[in-house]
Structures are given as C-alpha cells and as structure tokens.
Image 1: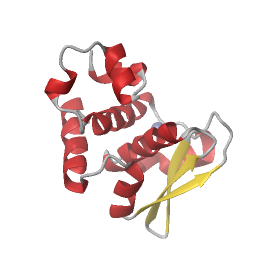
Image 2: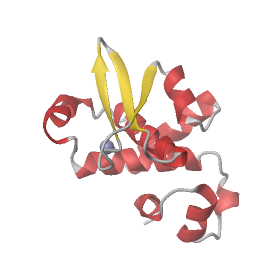
Image 3: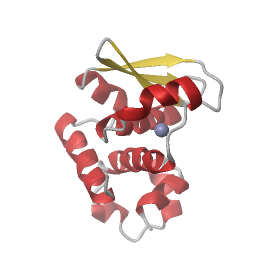
Length: 144
Ligand SMILES: [Zn+2]
C-alpha cells in the first residue's frame, strides 16, 4: 500500500471514530484486544478465531507502547496483511519488512491525525517525537 493511501486510511479512521484511543477504535470495529504477558521480543500479534479478529498485546510494555502496538496490529488488519497471519503465527511471529513498515506508518499517521499541519510545521523530527510520543524511527518512515 502506498504511503498516501495509508495516511488517508489513518485519518479516515480517526475522523470517523473521533478518538485517538486505539482500544476504543478496535472495539468499534469489532476487533477484540487481549492483554497478556509475553516474552519482550514479541510485542503483539493478530489472529482470527471463529471470524473474530483478535489483537494480542504484550502488557509488559508501558501503556503508551501498548497503544502503539495496538495501532501497529490494527494497521496490519486494515492494510489487509492477513494472508500470511497463520504462517507467521506458527513459525516466525514476523512478517516481511514491507508490511512491518506499512503497519508502523499507519500507527504513526493515526497518532499524528489529532495534530494539525500548522501545529507541527517548523518542528524537527526530534521535537515532533517529544510532542507526540512517537519513536523517531517511526517518524522517519513518513518524513523522508
Ligand atoms: Zn507487525
């Protein structure tokens, strides 16, 4: 998916649900969020059970990080990365890096949706990172 298409997707989800809380967005989309402790190298993953989509989130991470994990997984679902879920679940827990980038781009644009272009204009990536709590490496995916 192209970056601009992901940006439009993220802002339409934000505008439709009028919340930046990803857990509320999931609820509205009938996606269940499950918070469980997992090994730290695994932040979260998405699965499907009886046609219900579930996002598992590692609750050993701080709240802000859990929100990003949730948005990242939501990005996989909304960008239709489902084809290889089962494979990844069984074997690697990892997807290809193109899909990982797209999911991170979705999460980043979603968080940025609540800020106007004027609010962020003239700011450096590092300042935007401090203001929004978004990791610089994720911001560099959209500000290149
Ligand atoms: Zn991912």
